[in-house]
Length: 118
Image (cartoon, rainbow, N blue to C red; front, side):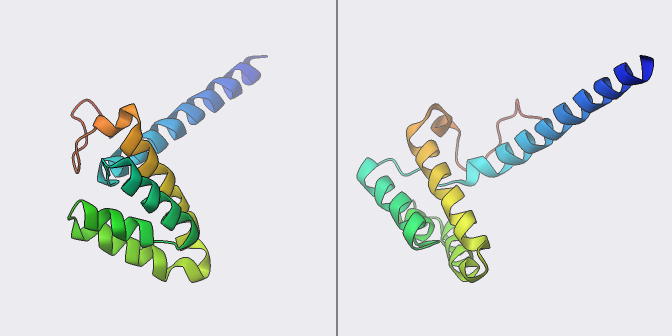
């Protein structure tokens, strides 16, 4: 009985630790996702990222005048041939959409909130 309780407790702690690590990583990357304020431009970026990997990220970087984001789009395009770029681009399409339309879009560009401990 004791070992079962210890096992479930350690399993629960491992899950929460993993979730905290994933949340920390997400919040580290999230502020660098471009926020395109014009809804039409944002939808174009999202659609392009889905069908031509990296092109929407490059275009979003162009819209907000951010060269590093344009470079990320180029990397997405270059890695599309090994499927990593496709997945990466689809993830960024979703994140661009969420950042541009959702409550989380209020996070400042390029800064992790001080309340987040990584």
